[in-house]
Length: 127
Image (cartoon, rainbow, N blue to C red; front, top):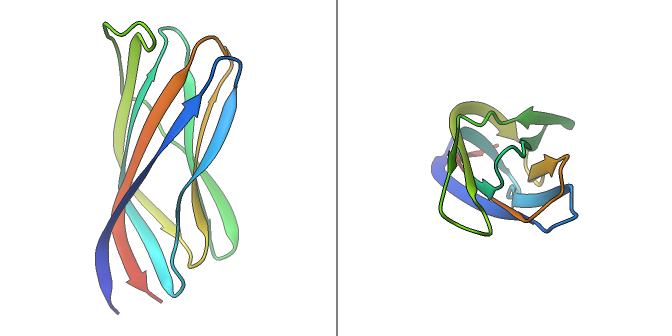
């Protein structure tokens, strides 16, 4: 069974007034399974404005939604984005061939803009 390292990423931008957005991080190629081994997020927003982050993958035709825990928040000297949210974690997620890997960012308080980067790495496996 052939396999090769694979890394991908995406950015979600929420404008003032927007509460949730989904983006397709990648479309898994035909005859390949994406085994996600590690993920990291790096977000920019506002203090005391919690964000919800999740990755969606389809395995054996079943959609799974996996929240990502933020491990830190730091205030930074940036007027548009005065807080930085970050986290990374080991994962064992499997996305089947021809499925989309989706990343969601959501918030309750829609004041100001938010920008969140996600990176996923793992292996593309022949199936």
